[in-house]
Length: 125
View 1 (cartoon, rainbow, N blue to C red):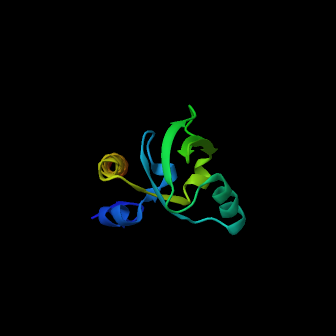
View 2 (cartoon, one colour; view 1 turned 60 degrees about the vertical axis):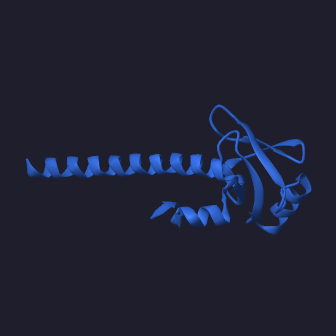
View 3 (cartoon, rainbow, N blue to C red; view 1 turned 90 degrees about the horizontal axis):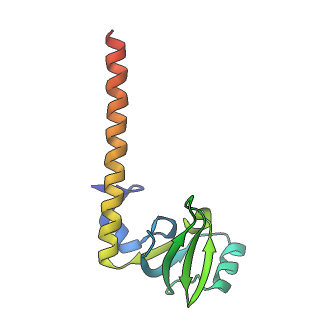
């Protein structure tokens, strides 16, 4: 069963989730940074390196940017950048994230089924 962006939950547990998908309060360890060298080097100077602990502290009212604590320093990143930084979260946090993503996926599937049913009903008239 696939749970998130085409990955199985076991893949997510092994490789982590995108930092942009972590909820406020989530903490973990950076596993990889998949950005162009220039941006990666800049983020490395801020502390965003594989093996470094990071915590999601808060987000702006509209959701972007978010503030992260890394090496005791608070750093704000836009979601566009954070989606290329991958985080290995603790098992409990992963289960919460998996549950939230599964609920979101089920809601989207239900919405799609409703739209398809409406199209069929409209075509039958």
